[in-house]
Image 1: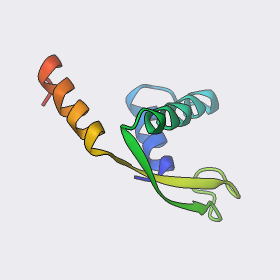
Image 2: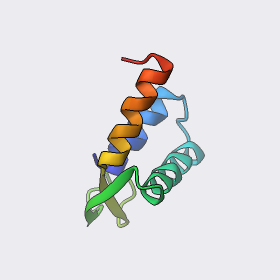
Image 3: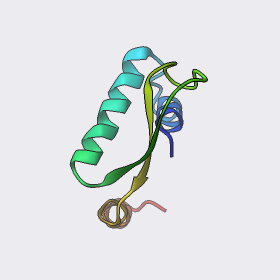
Image 4: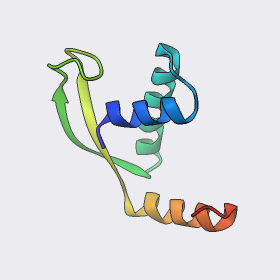
Length: 80
């Protein structure tokens, strides 16, 4: 999923519709990469202004470790 899609969905979900909120979400995604739960895929320059015109945008996906952790959390907290 591209970063602009992740940020948009989480801004709506957690009522973080501000420049600061979006920056915090972006930072959290980078932290998930550091933790090995998410990995970077394709990257490109945002020429269309989808997120930050002229800046690098990245596509992310869950790693096997990230998926296992998510499934474990769903069991522990009773999610579906």
